[in-house]
Structure formats: structure tokens, C-alpha cells
Image 1: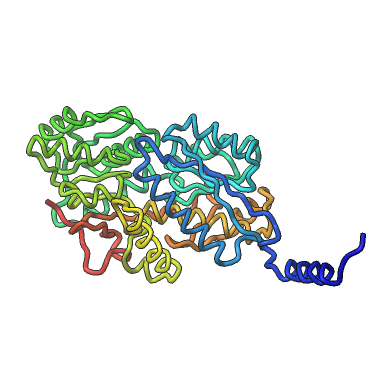
Image 2: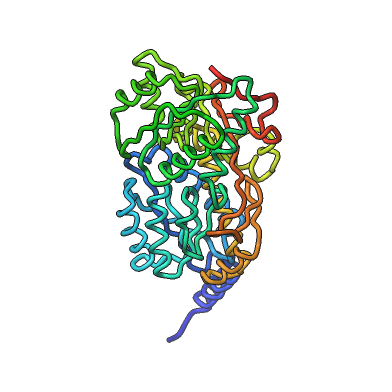
Length: 398
């Protein structure tokens, strides 16, 4: 076939143009698959994780991606159902053939995803797994830095903070969801409270998904505790506080395990609420330049998305840390091979916005980095330990 000089020049120019394209543009993207509870009772908090993942992948691609390739994040809605999460992760691995996995939100879904990852030998980095003793798979890596025995260390951190307050509690009511990680932590808190001399005046449980908190509120009011331990997740704590308000009761102190951060901080009844955290939007956390840049990006995007909480707190920080772990593992191993990534993470520490994490303890958990925060003037601030507290902040009691 004969070609004109113009055709040949055009072909040569096109070939030259392809030669100068960035390597990332010439290769297929690295595909990372996950699910999130985009609908259902956990959706309020899962939307935070969705926004964080979007931000991280955009930042990662702006830095050139991973291993010279762009990154694509595939997210499926598990509807807050662990069984559906299991099915969807199986699809991600077998049908979608993703290169890497990122964990979902909440312990039940993470445990389901972990089983799939184990069957296929995949690395699973995850954000919020609350029962370390159940993390038996050697290639799972937690960003939720509560150590290998949070049922002991987390309650002790809370009671240390309260013991240092002007009016330490002497009696406690423990009311808790039966959601697996919540129930596990609440039972641990119950035992630690007894060992520390707090008198238990009430213990109640509810099924996850419960919406009628009136009877529980009435029982708490009658018990007259100094401290109410609420084993809540998502909006459960808000609903319980609202039920208390309807019977003209405000607990002197109330601690929440995993509340929906925005709704709790913005509710009038949420004032002085206590919870655990690994990061809040104030010094010393924001002294980290990476953290400061993320805070700025999240503030802007959360405002645009009209999220009820536009500041970076524990959920957003755990999610961002999980992405940092995955990126560090791939870069450290210089590979997408799951065994190589897992081996590197087991042998190396990873710097994240919440601190330095290690994965060489039981269940790949390292140190308990949990801190105690409180809602003050509509914002979450760390109040314990003092070294991590917001400037000028200290624990307040109603």
C-alpha cells in the first residue's frame, strides 16, 4: 500500500506524541475495590469514608498514581449488611478482577470482607475493625489503632480521664447495642469499671437497628447514674439522648463508643458528650503538613457535599490512614503482589496522620493510640491525655 508524504509525516508525529505521554497514561489503571454502607443505618458515617477515599485517590493520581499507573476506585453499596458485603467483595475479586482491596466501614462488614480476602490471598487494609482478637487473617492490616486488647485499654483510658476530672463518677449505667464490636467493647468496659470501683446501677442491651429508645431512657433516668456508657454506633446515641430529653433527663456524663460525629456534635443534647478518637482538627494533630492539607481538602469537599460534620475527626482520619497504609505497602514492596505487600507491612512502620503505626503485634495490631474527646461549643476536642488535648481544653461535666 502506498502512503503519501503527508500520511507518513502524520504517522510519525502521532508515534512521537505517544512516546512522550506519561507512563501512567499508557498503562491501564490500578483498580482498587471496596464496599461502603452508602445506604442503611450506617450510611451517615460511611459517607465520610466515601468522601475521604475520593479525596485520597485524587491526591494520589495528582502525584502520579502508583507504580507509574493511575488509580481507579470501585465502590459498591453494601447497604449496611455484612452478608451483602461478602457477596460484593467476592464479585470484586472474581468478576471485576480488581488489583487491590480496601476494607469497608464497620466491624461486621470488615469481617465479611476479611473472609473473602483470605480465600483469595488478598491484602485487606481496613478502617474500623473493633474486635482485634477476631482478626485471624495474616494479610489484614488495621488503621483503627486501638491495640490488641481494646476491651481493656480503651475503658482504662476513659476512666483515667474521668479520674483526673474535678468530679469523678462513682456510679455507672451501661447500655449497649448488640452490634458485634460495640457489644464486645461495652462488656470490656463493664469489667474494667468493676475493677476500678465504679458501682454499676444498670446494664441494658438493644438489638442493632432499634429505633425505640424511650424505655431505655426511662430506665437510665430511674437509675440516676453519674456516668452513662452508651455502646452506640451511628445515630443510636442521638436517638437515645433525644428520648432522654423527652422525659426531662440529662445525664451528668455520657460516653459514646462510635457516634455519628456530625449529628452528635451539632445536637444540643450532644453537648459535653465523650467519645474515643485518634485525630481531631486542632493542634497537635494539624501540625503535620499532610494532615493540614487533608483537613483543608476535606473541609471544602464536606461543605460542598453538605455533610452534617465538615471537620476531620476520628472516622475521616481512620479512613485516610487506611489509604496511607495501602499506598505505603505498594510503594514499599514496589509491587501489586499481595504477599510482597503484606510482608513489607509486617516488617515496617507507616507514618499516618494519626501517628506511626506498626503491624507486628497480635492480629497485626500495634499500639493503642486512642484518646478521649468531648463535644464543647459544638465541636469535638481532645481532652485526654493532656499532651494531645486541644489548646486550653479540659474535660467538662454537666
